Image (cartoon, rainbow, N blue to C red; front, side):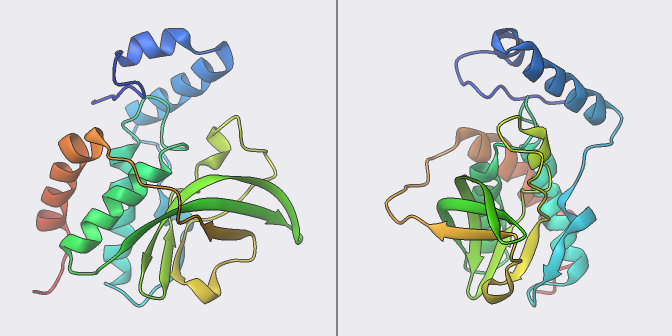
Length: 198
């Protein structure tokens, strides 16, 4: 099983040694789930209102993107940038022009804001994909009251439990893991596993 360190200048084990016990427990739980093939995937609770591709291909695609970026030692709860970059690359490859958006995600419960943070998502025309939110509960920074499902569909139908506000001054960083590891694997997956009509 491939495991990528969140820090480019140290191995996964070296990085793990620097983490507080609370974080190590999370990493060990994630490792156990990976070992047993039990990691969560976005399609299990995706709110799917898209008109693009076919439903089974949408599910397969976002799940594969999630599985790849989940190779990060600490899982994918802070991998929204990499998730969005990789998903956008896949959509472009499938001839669906997409844009990576970066800004602030605000989460609500009964109309009251409960949390906000920097976030990344994908836009394709009038559709939005906010696909890496099903595992926010793994991140100690996120309050337990934040319970949002992944969403793929019209921006106008975005669930009321979140608001995505783009910040045009934020720039998307390059990511060597996306380019060197995950995109080649995802391209192969698309070519071999997705039933896309030419």
